[in-house]
Length: 184
Image (cartoon, rainbow, N blue to C red; front, side, top):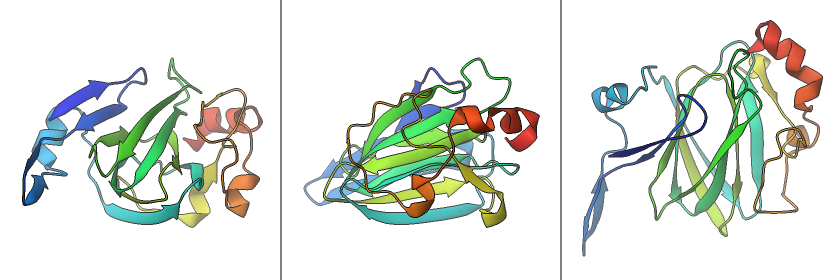
């Protein structure tokens, strides 16, 4: 597999080896030792899958005190996937990395613990899968406003379809002190 380092420490893009012929394809989506050797040392404890339609934007989400690392991939369709560094002592705090994930390119994106995560759907629909390094706790969830001007994500859509929860997420400036005091 090909591993592409990003400007955000520990956040990596992975291009797995895909073996294909006229019958279809085969690929290994996760192998603990191989991923450990590229720096993903956390153990995955939960798998999630979602389906969304065109222009749906989910995020930017994170767990406050039980941060989840995520190994994300798209099995059908295409999304613009984003990770925002919320690690209090990180040199890249508040910066983001983005990648196009699709069923066609089969690329994976590793979003380490301590990052907010979100994506928007570019195709008519998309199926999104991700492995998590900690269990989801609804009492620990939080988020950031998808269009926070401080983060300045260059989303490829202008009018996303948002959940009620994502409509009212706070700006980074509003929660930065809480983050630095131990949320993430």
